[in-house]
Image 1 (cartoon, rainbow, N blue to C red):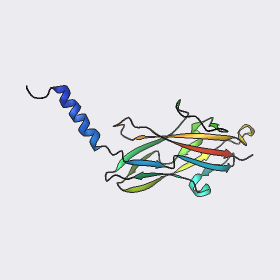
Image 2: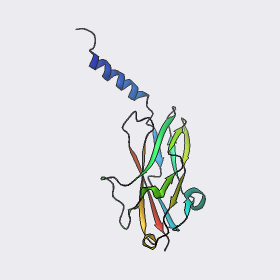
Image 3: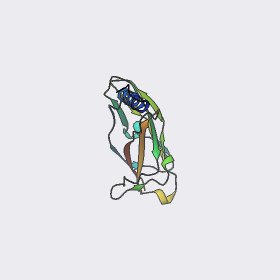
Image 4: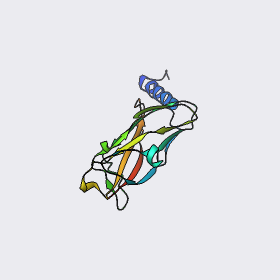
Amino acid sequence: MGSPGPEALQREKALKKLATINTNFSVNPDTLYVADLPAGRTIDLKAEKRASFKVINQGDESVGLRFKSIPSDPNISPQAGYEYAPDPKWLEISTPDMNVPGNSVKEIKTRVHIPDEAKYRGKRYMFLILTTLSDDSLPLEYHNMLYVTVRQ
């Protein structure tokens, strides 16, 4: 019996690296509802609707995260009465990359702009937000849903 081979050493190195990645965080709430959004205006959800997502880092180490509004996910369906937003770019994430210090809470700043067209008025849309580690060191994906109702 000799020393571990190169593959075993690589695997051990990868496991040690994984152990140092902080995955002890959450993005809350999982689902956020915002009613009565006007079309044709950009709405800061926190300032005007008192609605926001928050990252809670319960680990001692900081964590770098990336947030993106995505078109859809084959494993996630909008709840009854809602449909995927026609354009994920209508949801703007002001802080697409964020470093969250250990044992802290940070807010994800978002704005929504529904175009001023009759076909969007009175509609109910779901936006899907994808959270990943900013350095892609681990293929981690976390989803949050933003449900909006557009004013008539």
